[in-house]
Image (cartoon, rainbow, N blue to C red; front, side, top):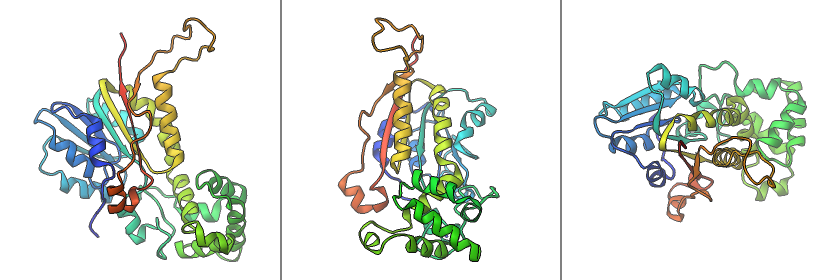
Length: 313
């Protein structure tokens, strides 16, 4: 199966990065190299591009697509190890970082990966197939309270309690091993009248399990400060999110880096000594145009936020 993925907010992201021909740029979620290709086209022979992805299929596809560019280094890893991976290659400062979060179209369309509720396939959902734990382990192994917590928090599903209860009841009969089995269990936990109006009933639970399995929110939360740290003066980080939980983390961390002061508001001068590390470029996130949403339905929930590093003397 060919690795296809239509890059969301492509022009807006590349404009936001403000690529310098001789600069060093990192894509922490390389995927099919849609954004990467546009960055590489703007680099001179002195520029450098580092692409990181944990998915072997993405690595193969991106390597082929970027083969003509000698400035490219591709690393199979999770972006949470970006700072260490770069340091191991003698890179300690970069001019721009890009993250396009969420699942690629290829991962969703490749049925055997088990990301989608639209076909019956093994319950997998691993973004890095070297990982031993799968979605099946979560569905069959988590306590009811833990399942409820992740479906409520990561899926933001108001029927989380009932869905967790139904999953636990069903697995007592026999293990839940396929996406089709899980989808039917979820259908049974949600009132029919709600199923008619609220989109696919399994969408939120599948999202929740995928986020938990791949530690998507933890990785984002734990990585952002370190990435901002390695940006050169004037360097930018562009992040595309696809649901409110990711967007909230990015927005909060960007704001905290812009204004880290912890002094009480009535203090006449700052005494905590925490200095701003730059500025938020996007007061409100950049959203896809109507035209893009029409062409690519998966772009509908996308939001782009940009932060610019400013090193104060």
